[in-house]
Image 1 (tube, rainbow, N blue to C red):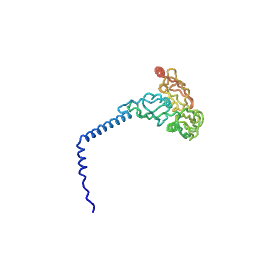
Image 2: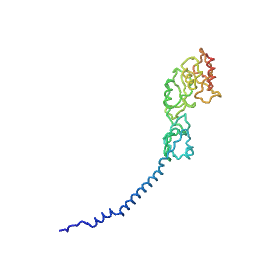
Image 3: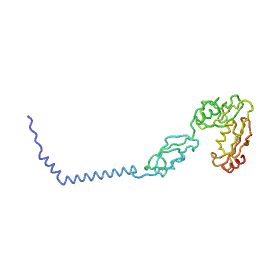
Image 4: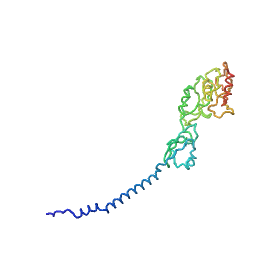
Length: 277
């Protein structure tokens, strides 16, 4: 038979006495103080590392050239990463087009700002097939492909108002060829057979884009586009003079051109309009 194990009563008593002693409470107090001090040090270091409570305002990156970003951020305690690119004909090439977070928001120091820049080179698109389409159909298709309608040239042909040839920079471009997005497509359009004549449209007071649209709608060709010295914004400049002059009974042959003269000086536009009236 195995001998019975006796309970170590003396050791248990000593342990209980130790728990009641001042030494135990001193050591416990030391452990608690050490733990509190350690926690405070860790939290302080963590706050320093993460810049706890320190926030700075995000500047506006839009329009900043990609090459100037490092200098722009030199004293702003921020970093950046270019994550995407777009192509916008109206925006500055190689400049920032968008950012996350947005300008004016507040972030911690060292935060990375994600940027989208406007591409320097335009992307390529396939040239659509415009041959035998009506001018209206061709215009819609050109815009769908991210291209622009350029000059229209009319020539006598049985297929009246139909596209006969598509060109970029004077060279004929075959359907499916890769061209730069935003390129201007010049069209050769049939004017029908015979010596058809059309009324001269009144272009006074219209912008360049509007005037060219009216010229095309009248089956005529755009001629010279002249801006006077007062023009600072070509997009808002308006026609104050045209050749041939507009008269209610004035007619010119199909395919002939009209020159337009534009200005930002509205007094010139008003004077020309008053003269017509």
